Image (tube, rainbow, N blue to C red; front, side, top):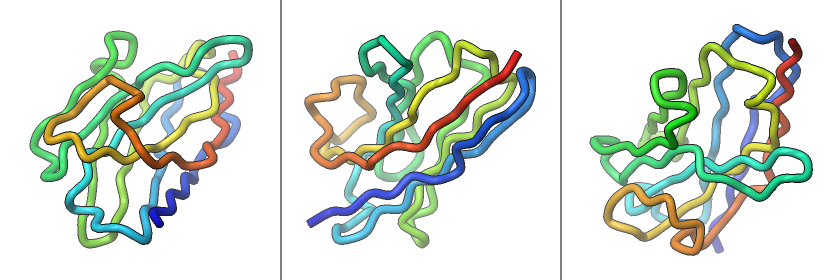
Length: 124
């Protein structure tokens, strides 16, 4: 059984940065493509970004390109989401998920295990 735990979410001021972490246990982390999704109040969950097993390929939704960066440390079973230039529009619960996809993917159905999420609130 794969267990995923996100951390790092908190209240920040607009323009500031925040780094989220996601630790995976119970599986072979290095096999997984990892993804970050978010869900704002009243809205559907949306794709944020994804990184392949090696860290060599990433994929981002347009709204975060140039501001957010996904990275991973396979020795620590951890994937990170570095978020810069945050805006109130980034306020959401951020979820981490694992996939056996060979490449980064936006398809939520491709992700089999999900964390409980971490709340990010950006104040104006």
